[in-house]
Image 1 (cartoon, rainbow, N blue to C red):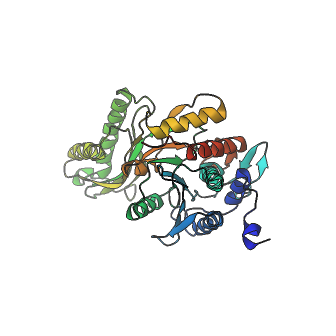
Image 2 (cartoon, rainbow, N blue to C red):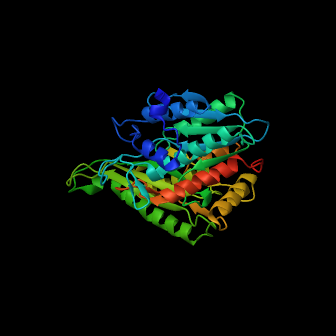
Image 3 (tube, one colour):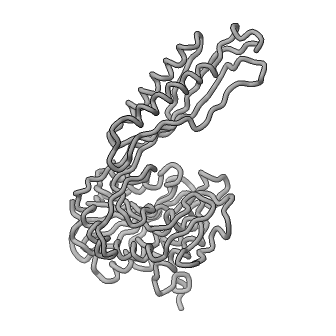
Amino acid sequence: MSDAEAVHPAADDVVDLLAQLVAIDSVNSDLVAGAAGESAIADWCAEWLADRGFEVTRLEGRPGHPSIVAIARAPGAGPVLMLNGHLDTVGVEGYDGDRFSGRIDDGRLHGRGSFDTKSGVAAAMVAAARAHAEGALRGDLVLTLVADEEFGSTGTVETLAHLAEAGIVPSAAIVLEPSALELTVAHRGFAWFEVEFTGLAAHGSMPEQGVDAIAAAAALLRDLDDLRQRLQQSEPHALLGHGTVRVSTIEGGTDAATVADRCVLTVERRTLPDDDLDEVESQLRELVERAASTVPGARGVVHRLVARAAFAADPTSAIVTTLAAQVEKVLGRPARLRGEPFWTDARLVHEAGIACVVIGADGGGAHADTEWADCASVRALEAVLHGVMTSSGVSP
């Protein structure tokens, strides 16, 4: 038996492969200081794919956060299909049970990342290897197995830049995120802002001599409540409902006897596909200025931390209809379309001009204290992806 066979079993069963991926600790070190990061799992996947005839490139623009680009060449010319899945996971503090066991119990495979989203990565790898070995690919296939989706999405940014520099232009893409084998064709965007109010400290017995930054923050909280109500009363998106706004952190004051000269809030806005992020920021700035004006002498400043736009696919695009046809073929029922409240790397793929859609396995416990993937759905996902890869219908 060769070393490769010893490391990678000859029988490429998707559930077996998922168990091996789950056994590799790939907690994102940007989320958890000192965590393992993606190096070990990226190297493992790179070797597995190289063993099966893929052209493999390892990218590591940020040390400790490598991503893999693997290409399977088709026998003839055809549309290029890209599959994107992330290798990193969230942390395991407080996880209930063996975090990296890959244990199967009652049809469920357990462990951190099993659902989000090593199930999708495993299905993509096995489907791609099978289609490549059969010589059944209708066009070149690109797998991007990326780092850092759970924090900054730098892996997808890096792999898209690499493909552009190499002149590789995918006609369509599938982004692998948990979806219970439904097609996610829209998701919300998000924007995080830090709002800082400053005032003037004074003795608590003489508040009139100070400028209370917390009072200005309180005025903003009232205005944000009004904004929340307006968002809820607006016309809902068919799949995503309404946008949201909330304050996620607040810090201010020094002690009980002093007028607060500083108060800092973190504000989160979840946005819809028609929302413009610059307009969202401008709206918040107006509210902050108005809140500061209610406290003479107070000042308010807004800092944009991170902002990512929402995603909406064309439900009539070739990749959506092709994927829907394969889901119906495998499951024996029409495919269901859905929207997600959370953000995914599909937006980055969409911004690169690539038609895309999101799909993944069934399961539960993403970011929770137990996590599992439904084994039957992982097998079904592998069959669906294989069907798309060997179909001629992914051209835009």
